[in-house]
Amino acid sequence: MQLAMTGLFRARWSSMIQDEWTRSVLRVRPDLTAEQLSRTRQLMDSHVLDALVTGFEPLIDALELPDPNDRHVLAAAIRCGANAIVTYNLKDFPDDALGAYGIEAIHPDSFIVSQLDLAPSAVLTAVKQTRARLKNPPRSSLFSLRTWEPLRLNATKMRSKL
Image 1 (cartoon, rainbow, N blue to C red):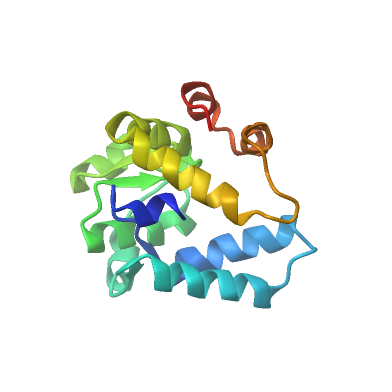
Image 2 (image 1 turned 45 degrees about the vertical axis):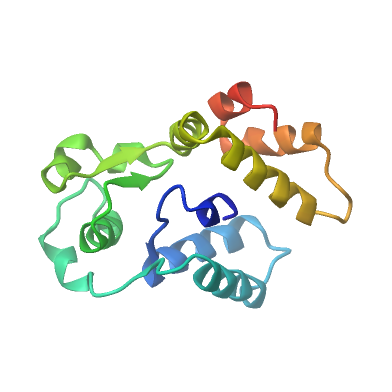
């Protein structure tokens, strides 16, 4: 989220996307509560200006994707004029389905590496600011790199000294 606040790109999401990631996190993190994630959602919406996309719902039914449950993501991207969908789920956002809308699906690792190429100082500052907020216990650079491993950000890890 810190990277989204740099102004290097416009992060956009819908309430349906927020609902989806919230459910996913609650499935794998039983130590967290819906109330905690609701607070996170509110902070995301308040700190990333104009991130919340609305009015995309009428587009959903006309769209075709391998997983019909992902159509809301493409509809939101079309509605806000996005040129990319950043997702680990590349197989469900094929180029032939997105190309007609001038949108491409990008893996988060590729996206972050491209941001590093464009503005290395801004990206590294954002990562350092994020790490500085993690105070209990404080996090080292090595810890940060290790926590990125499950996120499959291998190219980012190799390219940076985070």
